[in-house]
Amino acid sequence: MEPKSDRVDKYVFVEAIGKGGFGHVFKGIHAETGETVAIKRIGLDSIPKDQLNGIMMEIELLKRLQHKNIVKYITFIKTKDYLNIVLEYAFICLPN
Image (cartoon, rainbow, N blue to C red; front, side, top):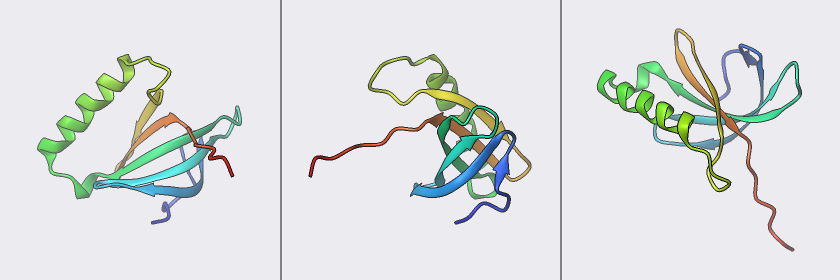
């Protein structure tokens, strides 16, 4: 799934890196700072309204969590069609 636009707010979509039950995850870059992020994009038409409340509660929880083993929440951007959750970009380097 490619985004309809190449950006949301100040974040530019670079490439798709994952897929979940409700949406897709993209590697993104903050257009002004160059920071690499992960953007979890959830189509608002694909989730029931009662589950949207659960997702918003998850966002509130992510805002408060701070631990070296938990991906850091940055912000969320809601558009007409999508909820975009911007997170710290984490990757795993496996030894050869």
